[in-house]
Length: 480
Image 1: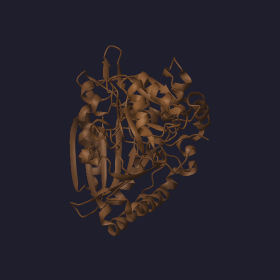
Image 2: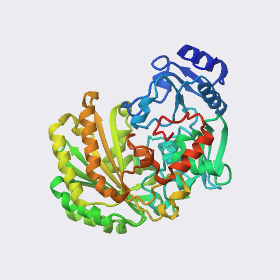
Image 3: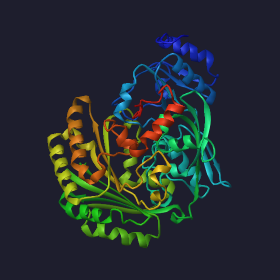
Image 4: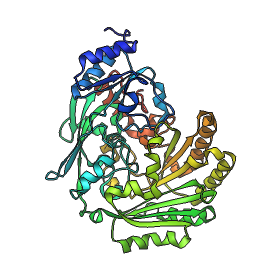
């Protein structure tokens, strides 16, 4: 086939059926086993459109697919966990979905303290496997998200204070680049590519497998047991809660992560402030850290000791079960993020008032509109310079997420206007740095400078070497 001729889905299907290994699957989306066998998007908004979906069985199949797509000018996107939500993905139209669902292996080497996973492995696939061997690895807050995808953007989570970003535990990756080459990148092989993979990997290739350092649960994480505290506070407690959070920002012990936010509670028929703390240490010591929150007087509290393998699935009043429920797939949601370098109680109080008005005016959006602020200890993360990886924001004090799920797209204009206004209201806490956002939390409108800062030039140069045809540019693309 020649360039620009591969526009008929049946042509593409026929080519792949003839040229991929016997274990591969090829379908036209919406037909055959598309829904049952292929990963469906978590976010139904800003969807790319596909004319063909293919599930390669072997790394060589991925090389063949990328080579074919490049030669015939057919755009493509890789699907691992399926949790990407940036608005930029909507620019991909009539493309090929490369579903990595066949790459789900989890191989633990306790002797070498490593785990090697396939490119489509979800976090929840490693929890029990590692815990049963007395091991752990840093993970995020959503058990159904793809571990490799989160890692490629950096990776934040409740173990960050002890082990740094998830990508800081990355040992090596195997990936198919924009040139169709299957290569390994590590600290000793293709080292510049490994620099880019850690924070900018989505721009460089499709990762088929990744190897991580793993850690003994008894090393730093109190035998893998965390004191977890979930609390709801009434809105009239906002000054006390936000002032306490402001006083803790940047002063947390390495063992103490905090996530807080604003959401609507049907039980109380009002806005509430939610706080989750995770402490990796003796229960009595964690209780001392949590006491200032308890002194404020939460409406509801749930304080338990949870093992590492159950923490993400059960904390935050079970919020993970909502995001990871089967019915959550394809729901239309918009998400905006912002890096924070200070926390100001007065600003959060103003934002709470905005949410109160928004909830009053838009009752249909109450159940699924929230603001979250992640505060992870920075000391260990900052031991590695920003220039050491493509991820550029190790000094970030907190990460803000504005998330709204819509019943249908008729709410989109209202939602986008409100979410953008909240991001602007929070922006003074970014200080002189201006608009910066962790690329995994990006909405898509911020631009490459906001995603990569001073590392952008080096990452673009690296992309020109490994993806000269700019094939990987549909998820917060950085091509100049």
